[in-house]
Amino acid sequence: MRQFIIIIFISLLGVLYVWQGIYLPKDSYSQEEKIFLINKGEGIEEIAQHLEEEGIIKNKALFLLYLILTRQLRNIQAGAYQLSPSMSIDEIVDKLVCGKTLKEKITIIEGWRARDIALYLGKKGICAPEEFLEVVDFPKTKHSSKAMDFSDKYNFLEDKPKNVGLEGYLFPDTYFIERDMTPEEIVEMMLDNFGKKLTPELRKEIARQGKTIFEIVTMASLLEKEVKSLEDKKLVAGILWKRLKIGIPLQVDATITYIIGKKTTFISKKETEIDSPYNTYKYKGLPPAPICNPGFESILASIYYKDSEYLYYLSAPDGRTIFSRTLEEHNIAKAKYLKNNN
Image 1 (cartoon, helix red, strand yellow):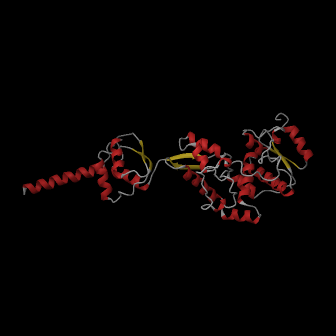
Image 2 (tube, one colour):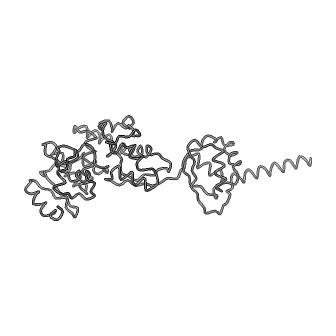
Image 3 (cartoon, helix red, strand yellow):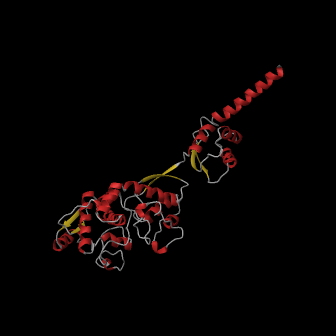
């Protein structure tokens, strides 16, 4: 009888030890938080070993035991996690199984080019700029074997010329990404967002006008770089679509700054003579591809543009857009507002 009582006592102690090890944290008072990385393909024993070595859990054996008892051995997800010794094993496992990874906030600014996005992601330590540019196929003239064709997954890319990359479709917004996301996954997140914003109603209107999504995006990229307010964008879009229709060069300054890499939209007469297919002073029609990644307002303005009697416009240094009906009016406006910028 005494031996039986001892066995029961020892068993209870064992159960208590296991219970405490699993449901009580290593250090309830710890304020320390650590970023714990689980790589894809990493084994459970290796994960347990690292958790113990990092001082996040007391005992790797109890961690493995809990996974076995809860049948979660194969459910741990890769990623970066924010863990603490103040968390119990069951709390840690719940986080690892549910994939509650540490998110990085990134904000892609309207009007950024693919190169700007790549440099931004590089500074944030998310991915190498060249890797991102390879995925989006930029510049297209240096076609990369790592460039991906997303047109099978995203039907809004179907009318994009094959010799053009993803510039224009990398939708500007705030995103929360996992630290181990690949450049391909980040690009897909942006394309997913673009697809959601371009609703069936918008696509139907584009088709009704006899335009392509690619033309709309290209036009929107010009508006993004040229004009600030939505109303002005609608008016400018109306002017540019009218110019296209009657065969007048668009003469959009932003296409010149795109070629030469200037930050300002004010250009010289000599710069308008640069021989480039993107030079809308020299060549009629839209440029061969978008010159930036436009925001939603610019996309809306390029679709729901406003017709007017104007045929010319210019952006004044104070941000206003000056509209003119005739070339004579336009030249007077240039002399008045841009006299110190040429």
